[in-house]
Image (cartoon, rainbow, N blue to C red; front, side, top):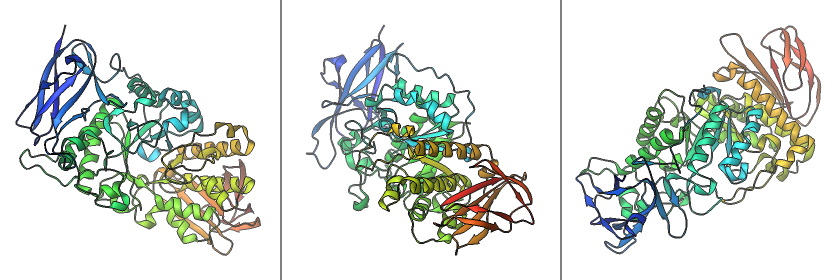
Length: 546
């Protein structure tokens, strides 16, 4: 039996709109505008799947005045992304549904998930990591569980033009990228992550859209700035979060982005958002609001709001800042330079390891990394400085120790844990070379990462902000720092950033006497009179727990 189904389109200052679709043999069905600026109509539809579009007289200045255009519904949850561009509406039991056949039934919503301060994040791209499909990523989740990470950050999965690119040109904000699989496949991926205690953070663009986004065709200046505010950092039409419609009492860009965020949290059960290009977005009032909307939608479960603000700044996360955390770009640049052989600079390394020196306040305020999709891989950087094989892997392990013991949340760029070494390509991501795990040096690096992740997850000293650099020897390029908590747990890291093996080296002012266990090589040492004597291999770090 057919039921009346609502269709609506916000276009308050457009003159006419019509609905066309497979249910009307693509003949226009007139729509009436209500007092809130929505064109509306109701159509009696049986259960099933239907294609549809809107026709509207555009108010966008790049078209002829009142020119008729055909657009996909900006709120479409599934889109046929071909030359014709049609939205899909699915009806089940007289109601709209998102999924293909029936509404997905979540299996693991009751699983406990780690809190923000406990996270070890793994950044990935669906096709480059798993082999093109959501389902193939599911097949590799046990690998990630074995590695020990407890959160993945998915590069954008909103519908974008074409296939297999980075995804930062969102065209349809409510539709999942169809080339990766169905909506059920994506939900199953997130559900299976939750089953393993892995949170899912979604990379989201609220700064801009792709050029042919339907909002731009309806009335460009209603949702977007008229022209680029920062032409050097322009990636598409920029949402105007300053525009207020006095007649309707709404901020159009706020309303749209709020609907997007609530939809993904409620429909796909995501556990956090990385806000792309937050510096270009440049509206703290909006960011405060959207973060609160996200947390309200998430309810009682932990949720993490991360800004990509380059260069990073503590103002975006501190008391008056809108975000929980931000990408710590300073960590990347300062540490990578030292690993690649720059002149030793202890003060810069301290700034990277202890983000409080930069003015950050909490452990969740920064997300540290040795690489990400925007940067060349560590192994590529080392190779560019003629560091290969054993020398490169030694420095990769040193970087891993700093990443996992620094103040902040560690994030691994997919494949970094075993030394993946493909060069970055513009707007393309080469697939991870999984065969590298068959090589002893790569496998050894993987095991090293796994051990450090286990150390971090099982030591609450890393969930707080206590850190002290208790030994500094710039002449020998050696330093040591301690992480501890109020319960008496402590981890000490001793670092040799020189090219020299330092035999019989004495570390003074060690936090306490007694037996300490070195984590990375699994051996015990005795500390007497607060002095530790040992050999320090070149470009290495030793990690001691009491």
